[in-house]
Image 1 (cartoon, one colour):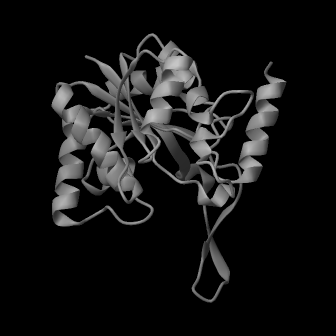
Image 2 (image 1 turned 180 degrees about the horizontal axis):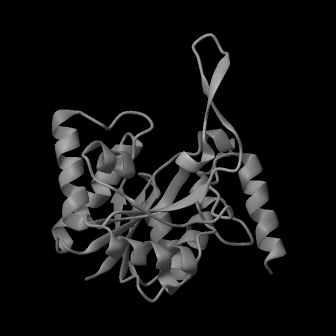
Length: 236
């Protein structure tokens, strides 16, 4: 079985307030996307990398990958108009190049602090799941309340019953391809706030939880970027 990393780097990063897409912002003389790709490049169980890239930036990404030795890069696929379309573009490419029993490791290009242990546990937990589904998770440490339409909170959810699920996530090629194909054909489960994991559970499948980390932050705002810079300095 092969493990192919599907890195999603198709966003414009409007909330970052930068003229440069957030995945291409330089931090410590290296673009964010390269910080992310290096973790998959160095992981012994990752066979290849496919990147869904913001249209118009494919050539720049290829130059960066050559410069920083990302030789596991197999292909650069253009992004779609939505996050789910970007995912589908990447999955459609992989479906043509890999066996249905191979594994896709989906990860956000702007989560540059994913580490070896997170990827390793994800793959191990995928082996335990009957569908091949697993996802990086962390516990919820704050109180969670439900909000009514009038802005008042009147009920809480036990923290024992909820988790936070992020990327990386693992799926068998054939399974996730079929889920996305049917979802787009029926226009079901592909709206705002949906992802590969939501499609899986909407279709009655389970997802095995793998070990995550609070350090595995997503760079969405300038504050997130500042935190990433600080964490890099602390880990030197």
